[in-house]
Length: 397
Image (cartoon, rainbow, N blue to C red; front, side):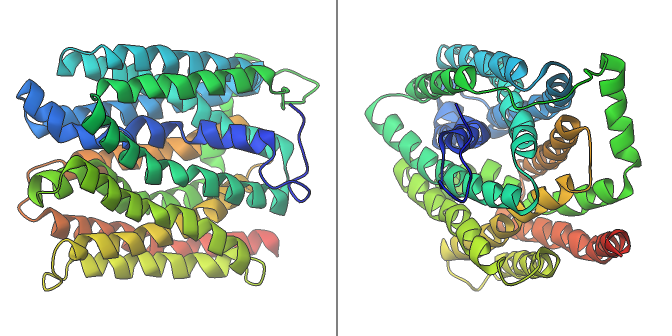
C-alpha cells in the first residue's frame, strides 16, 4: 500500500486505513451505548455495574497504550498493530457471547487491550510518513473521517437493537476488525531506522518524555479539555434514555447530532488555520468550551435543549482544537515518536475514564454536574495555557 501525497489525493488508501484504526475506540464504545439501559434491565444490576463495561475498556486501553508505543519503536509499526487488531477481533467475539456483566466486562477489557494498539501507533505512523504542516493536514483529514464514527455508530446501534439484539453490535465490529487486519497486513512498514534500540533503551524513552517540559506541559494542559466530552459520552444513555425518557433510536439521533460537531469542526479548522496561527486559535476554542459549559448550568433553558445545544457547542470547540493540539504536542519531540504518541493518547483517555467514572455516580442534576465539570476542567486549561505558550515562544526565539 503506497503512500500518496496528501496534496495530490485527499483520502488516499493509507489515510483511510489510519482513519479506520483511529475509529476503533468510538466504534467499540458508541455503537453499543444505546444498549446500556437495556443491559441494566436484562441483568438486573445497578447502572454503575453496567458502566464498568465503559470504564474497564478505557482503563485497560490506557494501560496498553504505554506498551504498544515502545514496542512499535522496537519492532516496527506493523507487528504490534497486527497483534492488537487480532485481539480486538477475538474480544468482540467474546462480548457477543457474554451471558453476564462479568463476562462482558472481561470481553471489554480485552477489547481495550486490542483497540489501544491502533490508537497508539496511528499517530506514530503519521509522524513517520508526514512532517510539519503536511502532518497537520493529514490529522485534519483523519479527524474528518473518524468524526463520522461517533455520529453514525449510536444510530446504527439503535437500529440493530430494534431489529436484532445487542449481540449483533459486536458481530458487526468483528467485520470492521477483519477489514482493518487485512489493511495493516498489506501496509508498508513506515519505521525507517538504521539502529534498532534495545528494550531498555525504548523503556527509557518515557523518562526522556517526562523530562521534556514543553511536551509534558502541553499534554497536561490539553488533556483537561477531555473531561466534559468523555463524561457526556459515558453518561449520555442515562441522560437521554433513563432520565429524559427517549428510546434507543431517538437517543441515537441526539447523539448523532452531537457527533456532527466532530465532522464540521475539523473542516472549518482546516480553512481558518490557513490564515491564523494555531497558538491564536486554541484559546478561542478553549473559551468556546467554557461558554458552552456555563450554558449547561442555565436551568431556565427547556429540556432536552439545555443539554443538546450546549453540548453541541462544547463538542465543536473540542473537535476544532484537537488536530492542532495533537500535532503541537508531537512537534515537541524529535525522537521516540511511538512512545510520545502512546503517552499522549494515554493521558487523554485516562482523564476521560476518570471523568466517566465520576459522572456515573448518582448526582441529583447530572446536566448541572456536567456543566461544572466542564467549567473546572476547561478553566484549568485556560490557566495553564499562557505558561505553555511562553515556553513555546522561548524555544522559537
